[in-house]
Length: 143
Image (cartoon, rainbow, N blue to C red; front, side, top):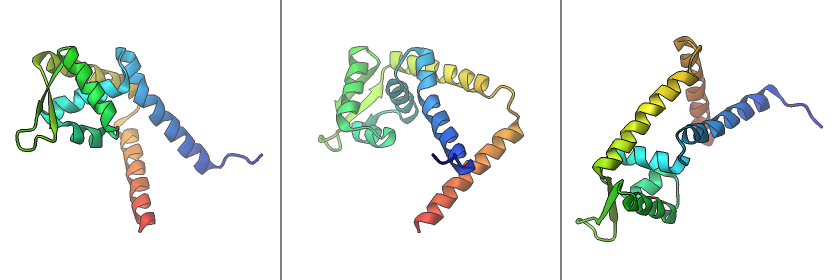
């Protein structure tokens, strides 16, 4: 069995942390991560097509449709055919959905602040620079 290299350790920790972060807040608020993400995206984007939601969230169409239908049944969203192209369905939050999404965003901000407790702005900036450099390196590697 070979030892883990420093590079292996770095990327394993990064991946595990990202995976944990994806689900931790959703668990914190008692909602699945897809619901949280969809509500916040709808709040920020306003009325949007299922197709745009699917692309932004990286989900299949059936999952997005199911989420939006659940929101509609709960009174959190409404749907209508796109008047410009009736092949597309548009979704928008209701006032109740806006309130739920706004509450989620406020809770998320407070949650992030707690996660960053004890981590200086300089340390945060170092991590951001590192992540941006990795992305740049990936882009250059693909050329």
